[in-house]
Length: 85
Image (cartoon, rainbow, N blue to C red; front, side):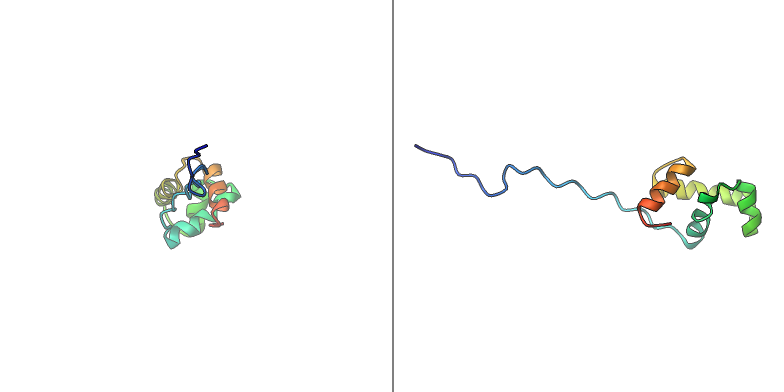
């Protein structure tokens, strides 16, 4: 009666890969990210931080890219899940 020996853990599934690291947000991106849960318009955020609406849009585009999403609500959820908010 011959039985093939198996190494311990040979049949275990591979561990799930860790989530991809988030590209680090700049200080200004973190400041603007904290504004997103308040459902303000781009113009409101711009006025509050004394920058142009286009500047806010640029920062938001960078934030969405780094969080790998294109939706403001989803970006907030991702940021909360990753401890950024």
